[in-house]
Length: 235
Image (cartoon, rainbow, N blue to C red):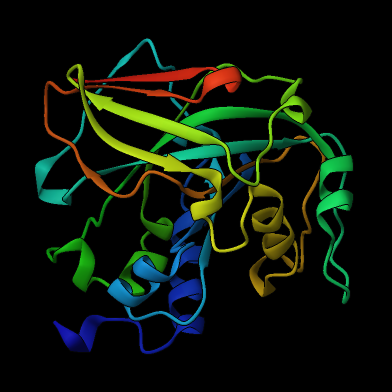
């Protein structure tokens, strides 16, 4: 009910931190959500939100992964950035070139998002931030270190479910126009300030293929061209 919802973003992030602390798992990175205007409008937010990624969130693309329909699971198709160098918190925003200099690899990836509360995803609002930034699972494809050969200001991707194309997208669907801007935004976010971004962090930069409903038994794949493919089988 309304009385049990976080009253503000600050409250939602405080709950997120308390829930995260309950898990005995290594923090390995961050995710961004609501990274385009359409999703911001859907959720009633004025800026993208962030959340921590723990080691337990990551799953092998060859394993069958259970999803729970009551969570309203949706599939997001994203560019996963792994850092080779720290990006410490600072007042001046990082440029794309500075972010690129700190990147080790980029992987095609799926994220399963959902809301573990008894409410529709689009109506959850601040509950999504509190609930681990809506993260259910991350399924990375193989990383590539030749990502500089791709133009990530307009890099296309294609998503299939059960062999049928269900979405096309591009890196320019991110509100910053590319994944580097997403990393720069994350580096300046208040939730990241105390820790900063560190070498080895894995960053899910936001969906570039919309929100695709997932059901038990589905098999998904996404083709990122020269960046490779990622697969997912739902148990």
